[in-house]
Image (cartoon, rainbow, N blue to C red; front, side, top):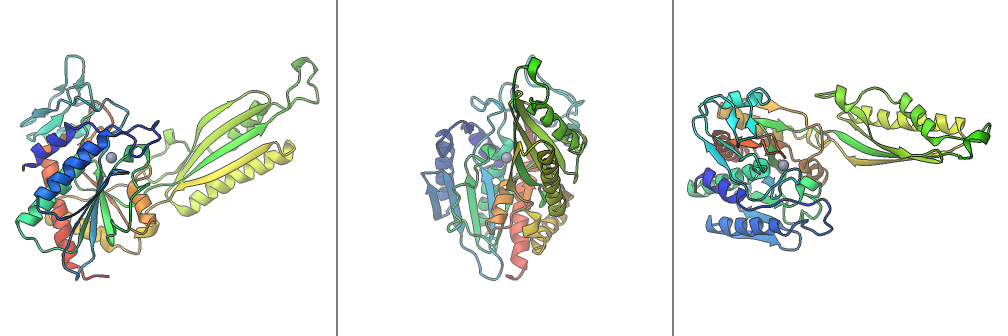
Length: 404
Ligand SMILES: [Zn+2]
C-alpha cells in the first residue's frame, strides 16, 4: 500500500485522547486504530504481535540476526485534544505553488505565518479543511514505520531484531505509563514524533514542579498594626527574588523559571512554578535557589512558607551520551540519503525521555508534520516517504554495527 493511502486510512479513525478521563486508554476510540494496525501488520506477514487490550498498546517483533543491536521504533496512536480530531477531511495539494493555502472560506494557511511552507514548493501537501487538526502528529510516524516494515519484508532486507510499539495517550503525558518493557525490549529505540524531515532530538529539559504554600495572619485591616501578615505580599516578595529567565525570553538551550499559577488571599496563598534546564547542574542550582529564597523568607516571616519540589522528568542525554552510536547510526543514515541532520534540543519532555530512563535510550526523529495540535496542521508527502526510507536506512546502518 502507498504511504499516502495508509496515512489517510489512519487519520480517518478519530483517536483524540482526553486528559479528564480516568480510564486507560483515556478514550476507547484509540482501540479502533490499534486493532486496525494489528490487522494490517498481520497482513504484512508479521507473526509476533501482541495487543494489550487493557491499556491499548500494540507491540510487534520481527526476528532478525543477532550480530547487531536490536532496534525499536515508537509512535503514538492518539491525537491532541487541543483541536477537533474527528470528521477529518484532508485536502491534498499536489505540486504546491508557494502561495497561501485556502483551508475554507474563513481560514488560510498563510506563507507569512508559516515560513516552512516555502520548503515544500513543487511537493504534495496534505492539509485540513480548517475545522479539525490533521493527525500527522503522530499518524505520519505510524505510517512511516509500517511502510518501512513493508519494504523490509518485501525486499528481504537483512536486519537485526526489530521491536515496534504504538502507544496510547502520549498527548496527555501517559504514553509510557503502562508500556511493558518485558515485551518491548530493544537495546535502543527512536520515537518518530518530531516535525521536520531529518530532525533528531536527543536532549530535553530536566523538569521539576514547585508548590509553595504561604500562611498569613488575617485580622480586620483597621486593627492590623503589628498583627497582620499578608501572604499575598510575601508571595510577591518571593517572586521578586526569582531570576528573570522566563519562557518568554529564553530559547534553544536556555532554561527558565515559570510561574504557572498564583491564587490566594491575605491568610493563604498558593504558588506553582515549573523549572526547566538542559544542564543537570543548572537544574539543581535552580532548585537550590528556590530553597534559599524560601529559607530566607521563612526566617523573616516566622516559618510561614511550605515548599514542595517534585522532579518531573530528566534530560534523556544523560542516558545517551555514552552510547553515541545511537545518534551516529541515525545521522549516518541521513547522510546516505542526502538528508541534512537537524539536531534540535526538545524544550519539553518526550516519551523517549521516559523510555531512556526505563533503560531504552530513545532519541526522537522528525515525522514531517507541521503546526501540531491545530487546524493549521499539515504534512508533506515527500517528507513522509523520505522519513520512511530513512527508517529503512537506519535499520541497514544498525546492521553494520556489531552488537555492543
Ligand atoms: Zn506527537
